[in-house]
Length: 325
Image (tube, rainbow, N blue to C red; front, side):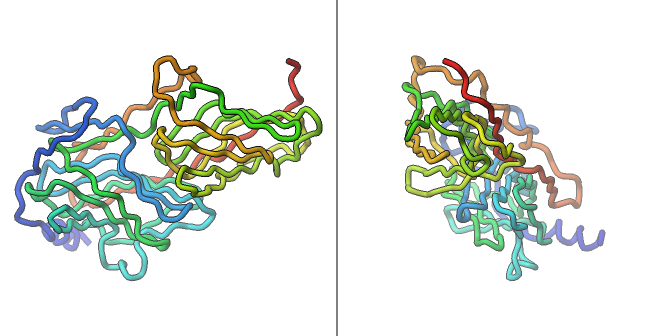
């Protein structure tokens, strides 16, 4: 096994030199090894496979002869997600293609996977170096639900890029409220966590009572018309109640500039775009977390792949009597 690993580490390099320095928007820079890596203030590029699989690029390091990437593979279904299917059994799990047509395969060839409703954190070593003339690249990840392909991504301006892992809560100029037949639903905030969307809400029924957990099952409609079911609840009280609130979670993304539509408890709520103004009504004191410390972290010698898995947070609901106004 040691000999095979050594041979694998020596294979696949190209004759390209150092990366190009192409202009792009950056919030700040950090030291990464002997060079500098960008920190981009948006969530990393994502690729979707239907409504239950997604890839998120969190960082890329192109400073050396090998290219290091850190990405999240999100499985939003109750089925195991195979990463690397039969026709890629002896091929790379991940391939990077640049704007010049060059291909940079991942050195690890062993199939992998992500458990149901989980997020796999993969760190992979790709055969480099990056062609200095390339201006853009895209990532392709093979899965048993199809290939997840990102849109074109500008190459780093320095040694690498780290993206933020989540966005601040959306601020609405006006409350997002919907009503129907004595029922009212208010959306409190929306946060893009990178791996999923959190939608905090409160529902009140003044005339009858909610049927839980049935009334708590929700659907989120994106601006392009895509309907996404909520991630299942870990536990919901079965007794009827006149009020319930919580956090609904969806495998999706929002730019903050597009309207969304939430359906829960039989009520449609139109969620306006993020107003992007300091005068917006503040909805939450939460802020974006620090980006992952991945750029510049070299994998151990002869090791081409690291994977850890965390469960995808379930939707959550608390119920109770209608509060007096």
